[in-house]
Image 1 (cartoon, helix red, strand yellow):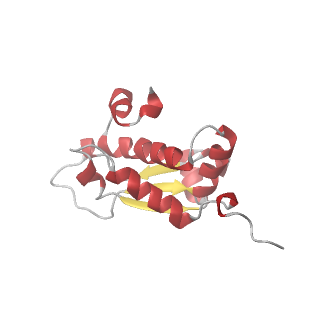
Image 2 (cartoon, one colour; image 1 turned 30 degrees about the vertical axis):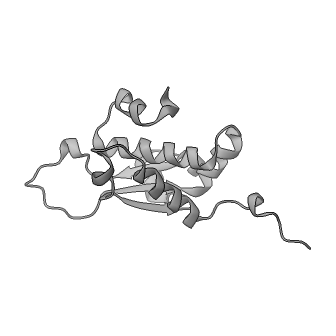
Length: 136
């Protein structure tokens, strides 16, 4: 049996994480540096507690999740108990990528990262559109 061509292999967790970090590095200032303080985590699927808390029945329906307190709601008096996290879920992302067939995996991961960071920054849809052309 021959090895499959490299472009026929599903992107790994590490590759999705690399794309997510690249997406953060391309954000415009003044957002780039603050976004680096949000932890990026990539898993194959959200865990059952996440799905239950969001009322999501199908794990394939959730490509990403922001877990934290938006900057618009934080106070300097707040005690930091855990870092803000953007979760990316590889299998749902790959499913959407395959279903769409008209975007690159890089474009899709960037879109999910920006959408989740929008929750962190408290962005409106208009704010998102200035950063992510996907919304045009």
